[in-house]
Length: 177
Image (cartoon, rainbow, N blue to C red; front, side, top):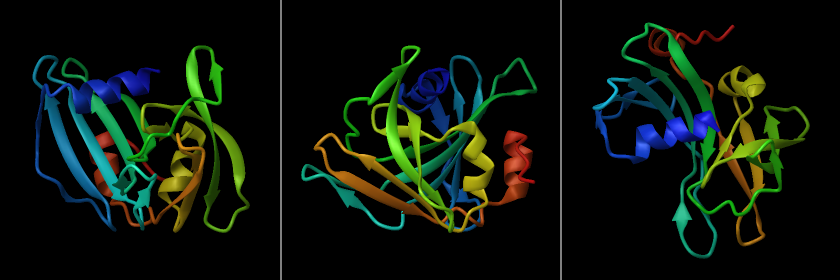
């Protein structure tokens, strides 16, 4: 819930000054923004999927988004998240876990078997559980399958390997082992 609210506040309220995208290793790009009201500084690392998907209404290229925020009055990074922004309507949640909507997905990292999991659901985004963040960011291939609002299954493929680990450490205080 906190991640979804912070993500929405940072990206969608229009109260930020945003820098241009710059390379962040591999196919990743980085965007920095500063919230004009709170002074919070945020970093977004975005990796487009290998292929676009369409749900009959629109065609979109999903993104894998890693984000972090530093609040002005603190040197600490207050939160980090990794999410799949689908670009299409994901539909209704499959379950609510303590008032936070969740969607069942199937995820595969490199050559491991698919795992069926329950991920936090935003409007068009699915939040990767924190225990998978490092595995996903270090993977060659990351596949996610989810059910769209139209009832069809969609599979999205990313190639996360190559993100600049120094930028992650410097900007988000996040070190990949």
